[in-house]
Length: 173
Image 1 (tube, rainbow, N blue to C red):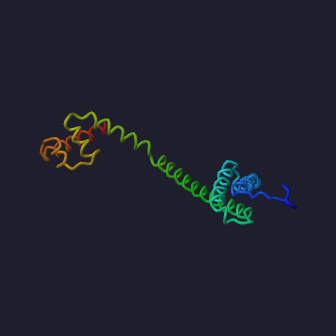
Image 2: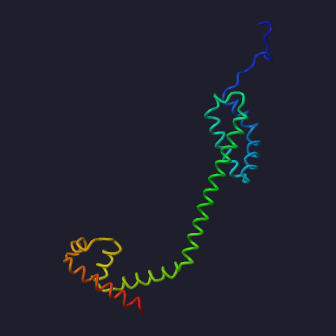
């Protein structure tokens, strides 16, 4: 046992220990790097967490240049996130424009008219109210309504004509 001492025996490190060392040394640097790219520390933390997740999955193939891989992966993930945010912003702007167009085109006046028409329709006498609801709200045919209510299709037509006449009269008041 000559020449062997506890100082000469190197303990092999496990994959987990090597990854932990890499994580502890690189995590703060990558957070700063991603924050610089994104301008948002919380987003940066999410990105770096995702990158380290992928690094763990590919750790055995990263080799000695793991830090370069981590920086590249962090940069790419950050740029992808910025592109995604830009697309989201474009969608938000389109929604704002569409909403403004609704307001400019009298959306609220249209809604008020619809609510008035619905209130009038609900106040119609039975079975006219039910026939109107089945035909217009539930999109059933005159034949389907006739079968459901046990009346003829001609009776359904008469109730629809009556309902539409009453709606026109009340809406014009």
